Length: 288
Picture 1 (cartoon, rainbow, N blue to C red):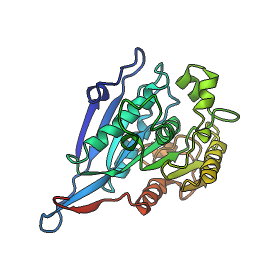
Picture 2 (spheres, rainbow, N blue to C red):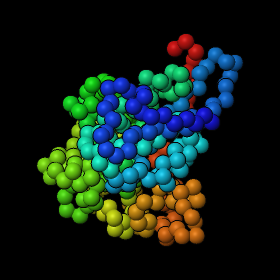
Picture 3 (cartoon, helix red, strand yellow):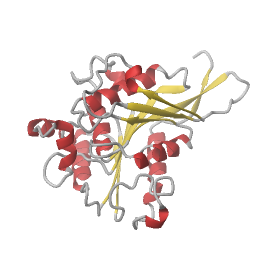
Picture 4 (cartoon, rainbow, N blue to C red):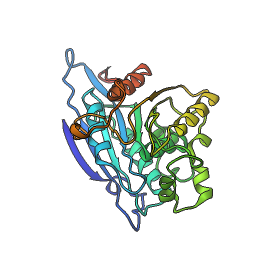
């Protein structure tokens, strides 16, 4: 496996670094794919952009590499974006995510990635950012960074995401993202941004999540259904918040909360859903 880390501002000159807060950083996990057949075929892999949570104040380490490694173990090229947050307000993190999506697609040939098979997966506030990427891919805030086809994910994965900016939600995420601008927070409520031409989505949440109530995911799913966007949703009875991969990759298992039996299998279930929609390792004849 090839692993590297880059300052995303060295990858895209049109990005302006935030005046305060952490600068965005990208780490890639590119698994080796063995050759096939007589050498006349190329093996192409799907790619995933992993967006950790952290309430837009930081990015969680346990929602970063552990998630990426689960995808890489199945042959995916996984990219973790530790996006700018803390005092970096909207649209800084969205522009960073959009620039990385465009970078992945422009680098597809050298990385043996199929550019038409790139997913965005986010946890908690990272789920909100992934949702913005899936709905604002042609917004004025990102139009200078690439075409809508370069920025728009081909599939969306949300794990216990922050979605709504009203009622029972994690309001702190919206305060950190917008600086307390209520009108902007309302604009960025994901259920209001759903559109018919966005990508299919896989969503999961725990019913006992007291940090980010699952009602936000339910409202987002209802908006997807009303717009005719394909999706799959799982609500687990027990799991709380911030579980990441819910295993020893992300936690001291001696202190793991009680979770529903099937919950640790969510990365596989999400990848199954993506693969059912064509995002999988596949062979391409040389020269195509």
